[in-house]
Image 1 (tube, one colour):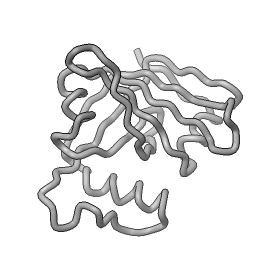
Image 2 (image 1 turned 30 degrees about the vertical axis):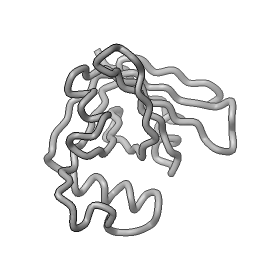
Image 3 (image 1 turned 180 degrees about the vertical axis):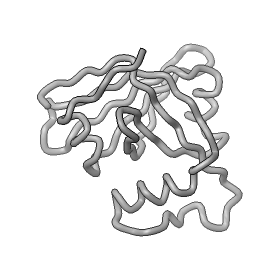
Amino acid sequence: MSSQLSDAAKALIDSPTFAVLGTVEPDGAPHLSVVWVTRDGDELLVSTVEGRKKHLNLVQDPRCSILLNPDDAPYTYLEVRGIVTMTKEGGRELIDRLANKHHGVDRYTADDGTDNVRVVVRITPTKIVERGL
């Protein structure tokens, strides 16, 4: 069963706020990564590269948590816990969309000339916690 985002939560996700993605290591320990995030309706989208730690952790265990905390409001946050599905389809387009959102550029060039395979991480919310939104 998925949860729905409030209008305030959607506005925060739609802003160029960084997020912290939490995944579960094979030994059960937490792993955190700073990421760019956007959304598709009530689902959150994150881009990663195939083989990175967060990707490998999510292949093994699709549970995650993502936290957004605006720079100008230290006691305000949005936490979304959810289940992940991943696909390579649309990976290039997503990272370009996120680069435009955060840097105003049309193309993310850090991967150019590499053999990196971009993956779309789709988070379906199972629990949403809002504070101060």
